[in-house]
Picture 1: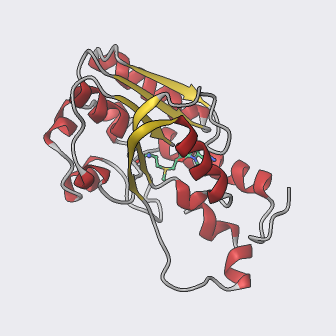
Picture 2: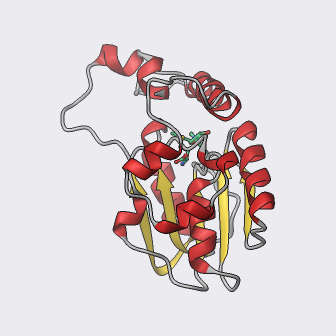
Length: 200
Ligand SMILES: C[S@@+](CC[C@H](N)C(=O)[O-])C[C@H]1O[C@@H](n2cnc3c(N)ncnc32)[C@H](O)[C@@H]1O
């Protein structure tokens, strides 16, 4: 599907999957964006980060700290949109405790494999990881109290579809804690057509 953003969305998704498969499988690589535990610590991630295994955190690729918006309460149901290797999902799993529930969704299978292995290593039984796309969430209306997301929505051209889906799956009074990249000035046509600017 060609959209007015200047890129073919299916080609873009393919490139994004390739980029983040590499982040999951070759975490020691020097990417054009920061990754890993040292980066999460630089962002002042909460103390729960220490409980999250390296299998997840070595492939952390967030852009900022969504926990600056606040902590979760025990028992809450949480969606981690674009969970990657699961760092924020597993931080959330500790915060909500055994009465709570966390669902991470991502479209890159290699990232999900790492997230599941890390949850297993940590013994986290209140978290599950689902393959799917942010523009078409496979969840019932009003399923979650909180949406957490880090560095994902900037990668998706159809932001209206994403926010419509987030509004649909959040319960009335629910909240979003989003860390993401925003722009202050319009991007040129040439910039919009540059797929590398989208994927990174
Ligand atoms: C920059 S990484 C951030 C991963 C994770 N949130 C973290 O902080 O480590 C972006 C993630 O978004 C996922 N993603 C990008 N577009 C997506 C979409 N349309 N639907 C679902 N996941 C998507 C990618 O597969 C990738 O794992």
